[in-house]
Amino acid sequence: MSIFYFVAFLSIFFALMTIFAKNPVHSVLYLVITFFTFTIHYILLNAQFLAIVNFIVYMGAIMVLFLFVLMLLNLNKDTEPLKSNLVKVMGVIAGMCLLVTLAGSFRVLQATGVDIVENTEIGLVGNLGKVLFSEFLLPFEISSILLLTAMVGAVLLAKNDPKNA
Amino acid sequence: MESALLLEKTILVVAVFAITLFIAMYSTLVERKVAGFMQARFGPDRAGPFGLLQPLADGGKFFFKEEIIPAGAHKALFIAGPTIAMFTACISSAVIPWGQELTIGDRVITLQVADINVGVLYIFGVVALGVYGIMIGGWASNNKYALMGAVRAASQSISYEIGMGLSLIALLMVTGTLSLKEIVAQQEGFVNWNIWVQPLGFLIFIVCAFAECNRVPFDLAECETELIGGYNVEYSSMKLAFYMFAEYINMFVSSSLMAALYFGGYNFPFMYDLGLSQNWITIIGVLVFFAKILAFIFFFMWIRWTVPRFRYDQLMRLGWKILIPLAVANIVLTGIVTIVKDTYF
Image (cartoon, rainbow over all chains, first blue to last red; front, side, top):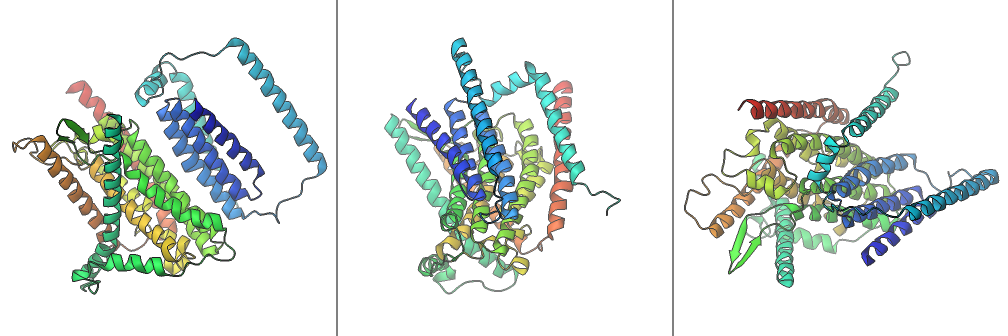
């Protein structure tokens, strides 16, 4: 349990650092570390497959692309646009609303109690695969179609228009 | 019991680490010797007999060179770059099974540091992480050539990771497990090697491995004719050595991975027909495994002096338009063959 609290502290600490870092590249690197702490959380929950997939997909692929784009943009303090006070006030209000929603949902969840999963081996590859391809086959296939759609859309956007070429 | 296990694993980790560094160190010498052989010259032969002390001399020189951190560089990230590159190169060997069990007294010692049931994915994750070392170092140098090298390295690594992953999926369909220990154990003898059932997958895998290691013909990230030196252009002294060393360690690890996944790992022909005891089979198996690894390392060097470097658009076309469709076709083919085999034979 103490490991959990330590890792949770690290997650929140690095998440805050992501927001407070002045340099966008530092921000992304802190976000990478935040995702790494999530991987540790999954391992603590005995969800090995989810842990390693989070590691590969988020840390290894998506964040590399983030870093890639930020390095090319070469953002720094001088080029950062100054935000007007109106935007700042709106940001504070939106943040407060989110906090209220979170607190409310937390209270509801507290009332219903926590489900304790009896099968602690559920996160291992074999068991997860069996569940995904039997019980949750339809949602699984639908989400893969969603990803395919996103991919086709990205290719379409990136493709040169023959009229402009 | 617990402390004995801890001691055993510690010895194993230290041994694997030492062997990895030793092989990486001597790869630098062998590389130049092979280059000399291919070009009909001697290669380094001044330091010690046959130039055997050359890596030590190089190491000493790297330590005593002046260390320069450019004025415009991000100091912390500049140091973090080579550190991450070295670290990720070293941790990937944790799941490779070096041999079968050794029995000493009444203790059975498994020659593998960690047998996790997602072993293949672990290696994949660490490889994906490796690109951070190059990217962070290249960006922190605050030099446009270094940045271009870093960006090239990142896009190349992401593109070829997909091909590599897809070629591995076909292999996993055959083996039915993600644990490297079981994958190697299945390839007993000679006819069960995965290369016989997955030749196309192996071809895709080895091309992707060359790209992931930034080796010729895919070393666009350190292309000296276009980028002066690439992502490591601002580095000097031991930090530069770390980058180069990480590359050789990656080469060693990917060689051992290819030997383990496709060429039977520690298995050798007639291993159970010679009437040897288990310990001897294990010891010979480890030697056979290292012989296979060294053969692959030689292959890496052979290619370096045979094939010229690609152009960047050719590299991307090969990755996205040839290797990925081939890998997908390989998956479909493997699936069909598996179903036909299960139904009719």
